Image (cartoon, rainbow, N blue to C red; front, side, top):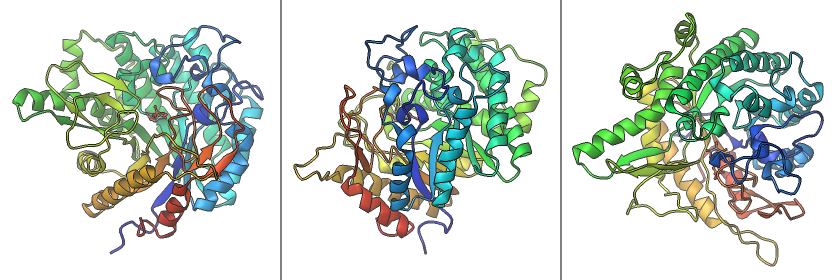
Length: 463
Ligand code: BG6
């Protein structure tokens, strides 16, 4: 029996702010990503742009100007889909205008046309850590209900514009990171209270439902999903406290998919709100909207697993929570435990819980690449990581999970969301640029390039 269904979508995923650069070109306004010090995950940022500081997103890997060359390389690997985000502030530079910026819209027409030329389906995230800066500075980000109006205007604009081109959409990237990285995820201050964070979430849930409604009305054949970071959590021991707390920690993430996939706040969230003195302000129709317009599929990222001990203070980064050491697993150079079987566990957990399609829209290996004197890059660890995860994904499909596709995170090197570095590379395609922004930006194929090409060509049979 074949490991993967016939129409399984193989590809790669990036985000506009980590790849495009051209941060102020063709009318684009600044986004929250354009003022951060280090990675967007830190929430550290400037109020105004300091001309003497190097901001990684300002040039990134210049995908804005080099997308044709990059898409040709994706096509050479045989990509069937490509996930990226639309930079909201290219379309609405401040976020609150009534009319869109035509030059921004035209850029994504060119990009989507280029992808479709090679038969590559665009998979589009509407908001990937890049809320227009004015919506943070003047509105307080998603804590302000007005963002629902601004976001849905943006959604309606891009659904109408790209209705013949884009069939796969996602609303917010890793919405569950609101409770760990509120600046990145919701343009809310890094030290926001739980009351502010969950209020902002409520607005995002309503916006998510309205985006789903609009998407189906404007593009009947489209599918629109939510997207979460779902690296899994193991209890440190079989002590009942470890088991219970681990379940509670997992629920902090599954809360988001419970609301958006099931269309209602889970029963246990009432206690979460009560214990933390959270009272949500809602409009009369909000819960009805959330119930009527759930997500079609669950997109998620999976990089690693984490071990939780009762009472331990959780640290976080872009991969999720950072917990105790797991003696059974090796780690990447950035300390991320490599746990392929955890991916199978997560797929089964989510398939059981939601009974809707799953889309693995991020999985990847961030490591240091050495360029040999002859220019070759022998990234065997990246290949091994991908191979093992793909094999476990195949097992999950054999278990009965409905997985519609797999997009490797960062098929071309881009800047890290966690740290802003270039040194933390995920790509099958190398980009000549360093942490200080120096380099020619030239692209070259790593050893993993041909390996992934053969995986796609054989629909996952040859890994
Ligand atoms: C995910 C994000 O959390 O992890 C991406 O959606 C990010 O934007 C990816 O790049 C990997 O994290 P990092 O910190 O290694 O870039």
